[in-house]
Image 1 (cartoon, rainbow, N blue to C red):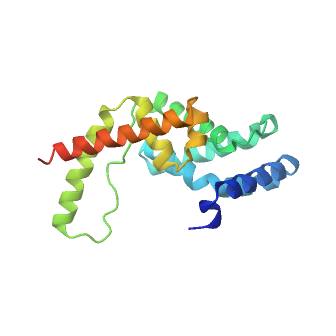
Image 2: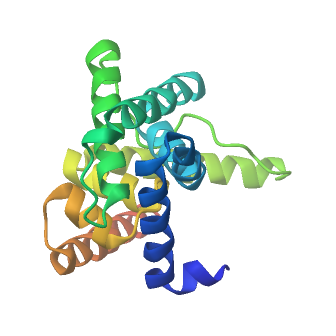
Length: 186
């Protein structure tokens, strides 16, 4: 775990420094790209479910961000601004493709034996079914927190909700999913 992971203030200060640098020198935008590219890709992959389409949407997100960066007014929430663009790119994709999924159809099986693979596959199928039953805003909350790994403050800003209320919603949602998964195995 890095020091910035342990101290969100240092992390925010580093991001502020990167934003200021990129505002004066477009080449410095690369640091912001490197900081967020994996998170944006994971978020878009969780939404789209296709590696190639998620890669395209990630590239489009950063191209859009770079092109619109001169209009960006930094208020300490660059991640929320960037993920707002990513959400629009995912929506564009769905307008064209008319499909959405939270978990991809297949996840890599890291050397599991056949029984473990079967159990894992069954659990993923159950979880995928439960996730599809959720409201879109609940699915989005899960994507932003776990696929994109955004902090609660960024998610709250992006979803236009209060941080404390958002945390409570997430914990209640996780409890509900856990209970439903456990009920299916009784």
